[in-house]
Image (cartoon, rainbow, N blue to C red; front, side, top):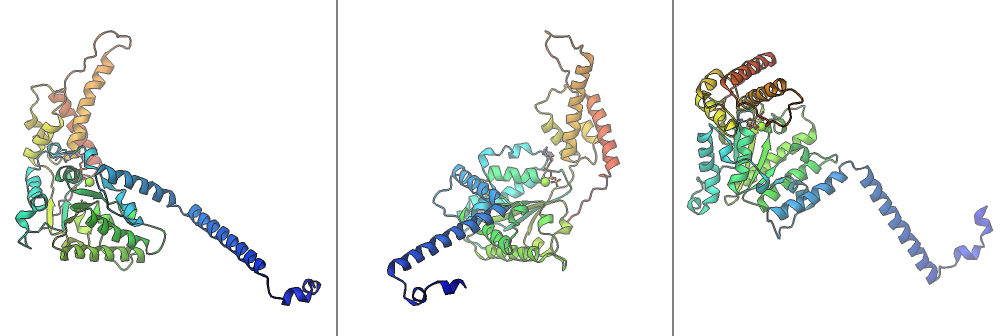
Length: 366
Ligand SMILES: Nc1ncnc2c1ncn2[C@@H]1O[C@H](COP(=O)(O)OP(=O)(O)OP(=O)(O)O)[C@@H](O)[C@H]1O
Ligand SMILES: [Mg+2]
């Protein structure tokens, strides 16, 4: 009907030059509008978009802070770079760790020294720093603490890798992000890639694994092997876990240097107590040896919590024994005495037995 109304000439005659240009112009505009609309829609429905933009800003800021210049990073590397640790903002040093001197000395000798004094180790392939370091042991005994101090003291670039950064809704993106972790570490070397609670990320592979996870694990392992073949590469992967038995055996093989950070013994507990109470108001008669004897089975974190409880007892005493209207006088909180610590120990023992933490595992791998 409609076609009949249009004169036949108009349909059959060739288009004029202006008409062709007009048509092309309209098509271009239409194409551009469609492209930007779709792009805007994809961005709007992408839940990770905001995160990516934030990560990019964060990465640029961090790179400036740690003094990395003239290094071009891809988009994937940028999102990993957001997890770089600025050593200047780290608070933990070796002196904040008590009772683990042997572990620290060994860590310094096997991991840090070969990179800091590279010229001494250059001739030998055997003396190269290990590509994987595993810290394992019961919870609350200082694994994360040691990793933080390493970041601060070693002077390496430190990537604190959270497994959630490697996840993406698009198929295959996780693998690209995993590859970016390694390429970024190589660009910034010497560097340490630290994975806390590594058992959750690289646990034993099974046939019921999701395909994307299985692929990411496999990629991680092969990239890790890549580090091994390059003798000049100064990238170390450091992991911490309290469930080493859950780790994939292939991952364990890639972490030949292992440090067992066990429950503190009597001497270590005394040292930890000394460190925790160093700047506190403690009565001079307090016998820390006695306290260390009574805290058998306590971790470093338990000891800290126990001391906090004891200190709180003093504040509580002050608050309850001072009338509300007693103003003008100088606030005086009595120092922590042996009894406070004993009370706190009993309380901690009760809560430990209630939560069944007494059955701590001491899995030794070697
Ligand atoms: N050797 C230690 N010296 C001083 N403080 C310690 C020590 N061990 C543990 N602590 C205290 O316990 C807290 C927890 O330690 P950390 O986070 O290192 O435990 P972890 O071994 O990583 O435990 P998890 O396996 O549960 O992650 C520290 O913040 C610190 O206050
Ligand atoms: Mg930890």
